[in-house]
Image 1: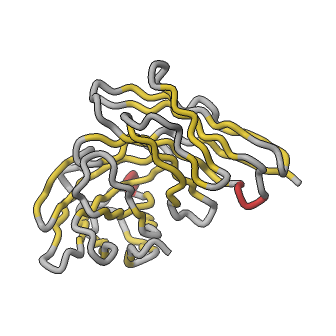
Image 2: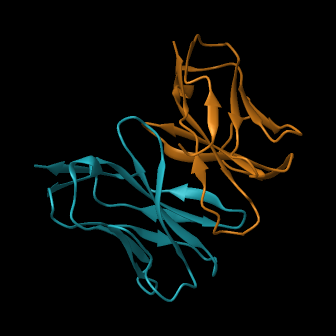
Length: 115
Length: 113
């Protein structure tokens, strides 16, 4: 158990809908990362938050947004869902203080299926 | 831009033998970290080992060691004495800047009895 929690574990929805994925980092970790794992794109970094502020942005679509709340939990919002958004979405957390050498602890992931 | 290349889509090894999973990387950053993660069929990502770009010695963690050759830009994972439970997908990843990870496509390792 990495100490990172993600809910829900599975999510099945229809095209055009909007969903929210939730992540609670390990106790004491200030930085949260979101990754998408799909068969065709592999594992891709989406976005990073550090202590409530956006720190880095990767290949995140405009239909996707995220935020980190004062209690440090984070939510990833996916809207106008398409079939291609079906993927495993991971949240990871680190202390966020050591540039480049923080080991990232991954949550169990949320498997999103868009029908 | 950073890039990680894992050229072995799949590897087979017999139990108790050693296996090397290849990873090459490309970056213009002088400071970076190299990671290996294991993803079993259950889907979770498990951290295995870390190597910093300025570390002089190769990293080791139990049965895992990282063969770091900076000039060749390679960071191969060596698993000694393979076990059935080692069957999984293995990802090489690199971090720099604010520690965001760039992953390779992965290598599926199958350990046979």
